[in-house]
Image 1 (cartoon, rainbow, N blue to C red):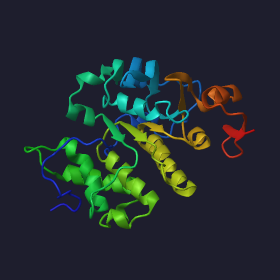
Image 2: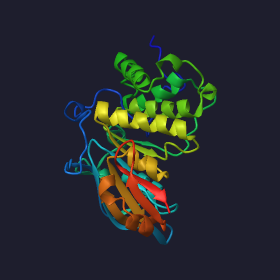
Image 3: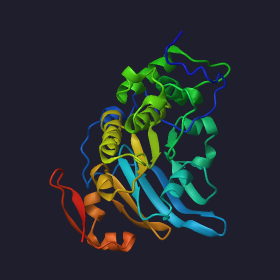
Image 4: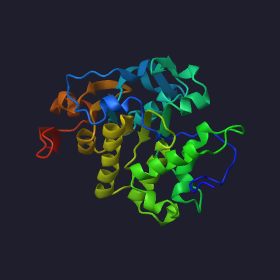
Amino acid sequence: MTPFRDRTSRRATPAQTPSIAPDPTAENHAGAPTSPSETPAARIAARGLTVGYGQDPVLRDLDLQIPADRVTTLIGPNGCGKSTLLKSLCDLLPFTGEVLLEGRSIRELKGVQRARRLTLLPQSPTAPEGLTVAGLVARGRHPYQSWLAQWSARDDDVVRDALEATGLLGLAHRPIAALSGGQRQRVWIAMALAQDTPTLLLDEPTTYLDLAYSIEVLSLVRRLKEERGKTVVMVLHDLNLAIRHSDHLVALAGGAVAAQGAPEEIITPELLQEVFGLDALVVADPVTGGPLVVPA
């Protein structure tokens, strides 16, 4: 009997969360430094993407490149379509145009195929009452199970690896309700890891967390990229956290991409005024040497 199996449901249902076995690309990219001159292939691409609720499009004729094996963050003012874009990249919202995942149309991928390549962790997820850390993380294995393929030693190994990667192995049998905010968010990321996909989409993973917990979560995200070669796309509201913890930024404004590229290439006072209506200075971060936004 394996210690990590989720026994709350025997029927497998595709989940929207991440991976655990080492990504085959990780050996070439884990820990590799990022520089503006590097141009990794696109893991996700959007062409002429238009998405809307009702008659008014939120995103209009948008083109986008998400580089592989990098941390990309979507930034922009409230209501600019960051979360809408993230959901559209998973084909969770109706859209016109094209979304490509690893060069293949997202619409060509069936549910289980997609769930084994792409994970979405939505804003402020909630866990069923009484569920333990291990029980929730085990749910990330649903895309790999069926009536014929039940829980296996491989699934148990993947869950254990996810718990170890997120520093939660010692809390495996603790109720989620007994955890701190930062620990809970790490549990959700561990579940996403257990889904074993090369690409993770995180919608505001630091929402409602104080600064210390936010940095803890974002440091974990960086480690997943550096040590496991994961491609991460996330939405953040804090500009300086986004700059410090990202290799690639996509600035959205007016339903379109205002700029995309490395933080040191695109973060300028002019862009901040255009996208956020913010008068600010851009100075060198005394810790990283990268851009630091200082409101004027």
